[in-house]
Length: 619
Image 1 (cartoon, rainbow, N blue to C red):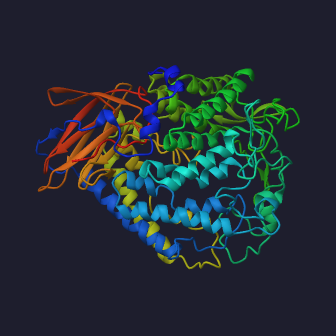
Image 2 (cartoon, helix red, strand yellow):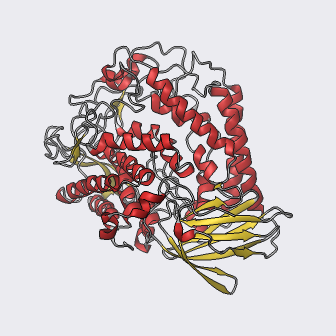
Image 3 (cartoon, helix red, strand yellow):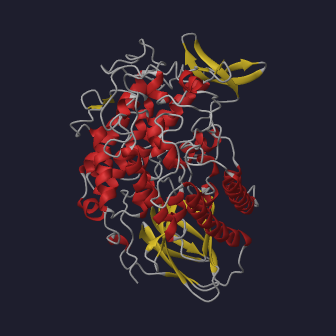
């Protein structure tokens, strides 16, 4: 940890002043610009990067016009449920705000905001007939009334990005406060959180409070319907199959590590409102789970009863509960048991706490858990294998090699050599090591081809609003931002982790980035027009990147921020044989026409209190 946590927890008047108002980050006000004036022939990666950003902007509009009406509502058969419920409808525009944050056109943000607004209204009007918690609206107070946090999170992916784009949006601020208070204990209706025991009372929770009975198959599957007209992407051939899928999903009373995803609401509410109580609640809840792991031989228990006892909602089994360490239900489509342990997804709560504090203790919980699991490894068919599940007979479901879930996230945040050694290499990390020099261009070309093939699928899709479920368009979304995030921001895309399959996909994540960019001339987030950036090396103290202005006639003004939320301080920039002190979370650059450079930023990571306040972009 690089800054004084006691000072952070004591609060700061600066956050309250600046969190919701762009342009009040005093340390960046009127920062002198550093000129980049060395002529640079346009690198192929830079041309491809800018072309991909433009392509995806056009593709997003075409996708929107195919699957959303003029009111920006999804055109589909609206249902409740974990298969094709409200979260799936908004997932169709996942990552569009990220595209805007990397320089995509203003229309991308306008579309994302319009779809989000229409989504809240559309699913607030929609009702269930048979499912009890949805009879007053599939959204109540613009939020799921009761559902598990794997699916609530997935439905918040766009919402949780919008504060990075429009931190002064009053409606967004009000919603962030309201949503977070469903979990802080402040809301008189949504009594999800027990502040004395520091737990969320049920795995099913939301705007009407916790579900304090076992969930039923109907609660998960939604109202009966005729599946014949629809594309059933999960493989079911009937509603009976859909219902049967959830036969063993009944142990939901009590706290589950997936509830840690709610901490993203706390972080965003803290950022948008400046109210430190949201940060304090987030850290309190994460600390409670860290203590439970320490008391359980280093392993996060997968059920805490509403009375605070380990396994209290799962027959006393620490590994019990839906989506727990021992959760291997029968898939009715195949007739076979499938491991559905979702505990690795809970690292998101610890990552949120880490970005708020820079405290390595939150990562150590996961290192200790991985070590404990790897210690149970044994040879299977002559190959050393690690377990991934735990039941009444002990560890099971052994997979070849070490247990590596979440090792990529741990390394990215810590930048420690030992954490890097624990994770498997990926094309991106190989590029950062100088071992895959062609990766940048290859990744961009692959994404361009994906845009083309996805739009072919969109054009060939014969479904209508009456024969389409909310989850059908998701796989046709032409916007994919993982490579762009790696390249422009040195960021990880937790929703689509590059170290898959050893990390699970996540929903509703924060922005975990080494850098973030602002266009000083257009006074907005994102790379300026014609500017491309390639992060080439990351280590604990430096970031090396190339940047270029492809425009041969016009200069561009760029502000580089340290971290997705300004949590990193840029101490100095090395440009050629010069070392220029900076001493701020923000660095202002003027890139002359047709010019570029390779620069190295000396950084003090996680030394600044996070903020959404934009740097001063005034000319």
